[in-house]
Image 1: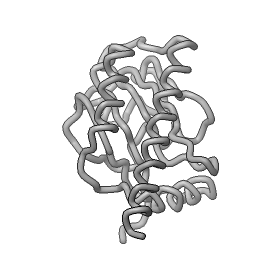
Image 2 (image 1 turned 90 degrees about the vertical axis):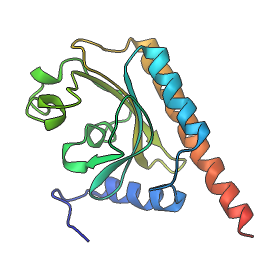
Image 3 (image 1 turned 180 degrees about the horizontal axis):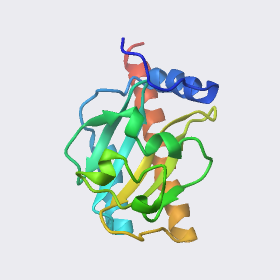
Image 4 (image 1 turned 30 degrees about the vertical axis):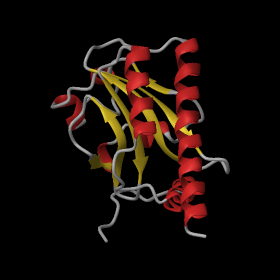
Length: 173
């Protein structure tokens, strides 16, 4: 296995373990997850919405609107920053943020200019990814009420993951 460029902290290791328990990585599209990203893009009027899951070396998209790749390296992921906090992580102008100004997702396609991501928090508190919205326009930030709505949608993602896992367990019994 390829080694990650940055050492994972304990919270990130806990997230990897929790994510593995869902058996969701590299699975086909599922209508429930697709519907959530479509709702997020429409609700916030952002052209890109993603359900992003973080494994050791990559960010994989369970569902997406407005973006072609199915994964990107974790080393350039905005999601990695978002899962470190407890609330919505937001960047209104990526070109002016030293963490992202030279990021290839900012300097090249898809030309990310604004980002908002809510961590996907499991029942044990692990953060396994984000529900995020992305824009190619500068200055897009969510109001406090919109941040609450993004967190509600992120909770729906986790609830769907929980149901999916429980259904798979029931089917194998």
